Image (cartoon, rainbow, N blue to C red):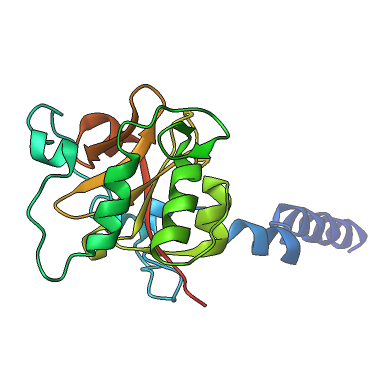
Length: 210
């Protein structure tokens, strides 16, 4: 009987040792999965938690060759505007076209970087102050929207440093076109479907007015 008793104790100990150890802290951490902005819906609670990958492709531009996507009229912003277009925005952006890229600057005609131009244009056109930094602009001044919901005056953000950190911003107009301060060409009009911008696209967002 003593031998059987020891065998039972050994068996019970082996069973207990084989059970997984569950920690409330580790469980709560493991249930959270980070997803970049272009895989989210928006910040109003409408994101698809069951299938986060479902919206990924929808929320990224479809890459195409850059050739022919920006006509001469668009490049100069000499396009026909409709009655619903914000003519003040187009007029202001046209003044910025060709301004050379200068890091940390924000002066029309002299030099600007991407966030500097956006900051000045929003103040002039909308009377809204936004952050000087593109990442903070997205985090604190905007709400993320679907790519299909983009409209004139919304912002488009890009990650150009090979990681998920926001490093570039532009102002969306229409027909996939946006204005931004390119580090190589200065302030210019480009198309979201151009290979470079489609590949590095991070989020579409709308400035929150308070």
